[in-house]
Image (cartoon, protein in one colour):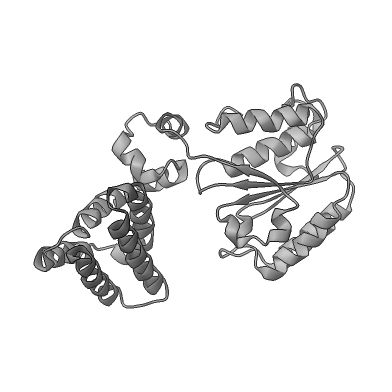
Length: 295
Ligand SMILES: [Zn+2]
């Protein structure tokens, strides 16, 4: 798979252990969105299922590799409406109770496993406590804090790092991305794709400038300009998310002020996601930010 970049040290370690026949029953791939956790999970799964591995890598030609994407020994679970319900985990339990058919192993990948609710996590825990010899479960997780400790302790934890500017250029096949745009992406190819696909970047730049104003009239002008964007309702939550990510990279400039700003923006984002009136929420945010700037 040549379309995987970055985190090569992780990749090398994982395949080295597969080569040595050390295959864990459960892995937890942790890291921000859009940095290749799921792609690596699939690559690892392919290599675990391969019948003719060389140096820990899948051969791409054996019976298992040929049918990999629809392999009866591979089971992928993804969130539906941002949640993984217990029914899905029950399907997984059914699945792992059968011996593999093509390969000697079976692999389940739970994508965005931090979307599992409490009953899903408790159900999964039962499998992790007594996994069948042939089964491996790979969880990809953005926010490990949402996963119960008893699951954590049964998984081999793999922490993924942000991607470099060069990695992102290669993944997106785009040489135009500069270091300023890169900062907004926080080293995530997924986030960068979002930024490139949209008019977000100008909005985020306008907002970033607006929130540091100490003159209320100037701030009001800047916020009014943002409110008047025609598609603002659809994109405001994404814009806030990227703005928060960008502000986090500036924390050292003025730790207290920027931490307060982030808190205010997160609060506003949460209010909007709970259907608060957009104009009112932005006005409230403006006054609060302005008061923080005055101090
Ligand atoms: Zn193979």
